Image (cartoon, rainbow, N blue to C red):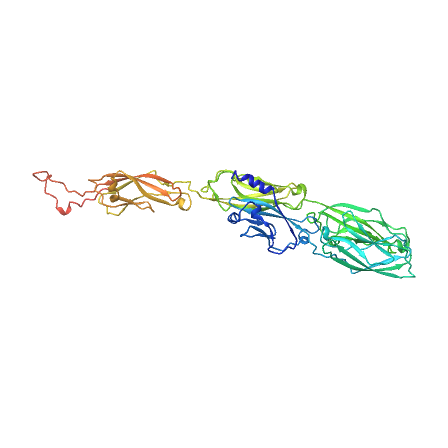
Length: 569
C-alpha cells in the first residue's frame, strides 16, 4: 500500500481527457480507458474497472477496455449556453481500491438551423427619416456555438435598404437596415424584403423571415435611453414579483411621436420567462425564484419605441448573488465489504466525495466523523476523501461500526448534512480456546461399566466459524502409551471422557490425563488442561484365611452375602 499510495494521489489529481462530438452514436468508442490507465484488458476485468457519474452516459467494454457511449449526448441539453462543455466521470478499480478522474469534452456539431421568432416582421417608417438611418431587426437564434452559431445575414437586392450587421461586446450579431435614400410615401407606400440568417457550419444552415415596411409621415426624433447599458446585482433569495430594475428613455417629439413603449429585443426565451417588462414604465420584475446555481447572469436588450415607429435599444445585465441555500452532499464512491480485525492503521475502507452547489465560501466543505471510532478521514483533492483505520480493531468486542460522516460548508450560517455507513469487522483466529476450569478432578468407583461417561471438559472460543469451532483430544497421560486407549477416550465434539474398561482399585488407584482443546483456524490455536482420575474402592474382596486355619473368631459368613456391603465412591 505505501508503494501504491503515490499512484493513488496522482490518479486523483491528474484527470484523463477525451474529446468527442455531440450526438455520437451509441456504442461509439471514446477511447481505450484501460490502456490510458496503464492496465491490460485482463487487469481491467480482474480489478472490476467501471465508471460512475450522476448520469451514466458512458460504459466500459469488458472485452477491450474501451470507454463507450451509452446514451444520447446532446451538448445543448447538457451544457445549455455554456461555451465549454465538459462531463466529469470517475473510473474505479479494486484490489487495490483506486479512483481516477475523467473529463470528456463534448464538441459542438451543427445540428441546429437558425430560427426567427416570427415568420413576418412589420415595420413602420416615416418618410422624413434621413438617409443613413438604421432600423434594428429581430435577430435569429441558434443554440449551436462558435462557428456553428449565427455567422451572417443577407437581404434581397433593393434600391432603398442595405443590410448592416452589428456585433455586440459578447460576440452576438444583430441585423440592422440602413436607409440608403429618402422614402417617398406617395411614390411607394410599402416595401417587402426577405431577411436570411446563415450559420457558420459546413454546409451552412439558414432561416428566412419576411419584412414588410409601411411608409408613414414624419417622426424625426427617436427615443434616447438614459444609459446605453444598465447593470444591477440582486440576491438569489429575492422573492418573485420584486422590482429589479427600471429603464428610462425620453423622446423630444410631441404627442403620439413622443409616447414610448418598452419591449424585450434580442433576448433568450428563458430570460423572457424569468423576467417581465412593463411596456409603459420600463420596470423589470422577476416572475420566478432566482437560482445562482442555475444561472449566474442574465443579459437582455430592451427597445424603446415611440408612437411614430422610431426605436432605440439599451443593454441590461442582471447579476445574481449567491446565498448559502444548498446543503453539502456526501457521495460514497466505494466501500469495503470486509475489514479484517488485524488490519493495520491507515488501511483505506471507503472513498467518498462532497459537493455543494453554492459559490465561494458557501460551497467550501469540511468533513468530520465522531471521535469514538477507530477511523479517521484523510482529505485528498477535488473534494475527495478517504476513510482509513486509525486504531486496533477487535471483532469479539465490536463486530461492526456505524460511522456517521458530517459535511459542513463555510457559509454564514453554515449548512451541513450527514450520512451513516456500516463497516463490518471480519474475524481472524486471534483467540485460543479457554477451558472452564484450570484443572479437573473426578472420582470413579471401581468396577465401573465399560463405555460409561466419567467426566466432561468444556472450552469456549469467541472467534467465528471454524476459528471458534473446538475439538478435544488426549495429548498426554501417566499411563503407558500403548495402554491409554484401552482405559479412556474423549469425544472430539463434546469433550465427554469415557471409560473403555472397568477400573480395579487394587491395581489402578489414580491416573492423570492432559486434554487439549483445539480450534479449526489456520493456523490453529489450542489450550491444555489436566484431568486427574481417582478410582474409589468397593468392598468386592472377602477376607482371606491365614495359612492353617480360619480367619477371625466365630463362624464364617455365608458365601452368598460376602459382597453385599455397598462400595465407596
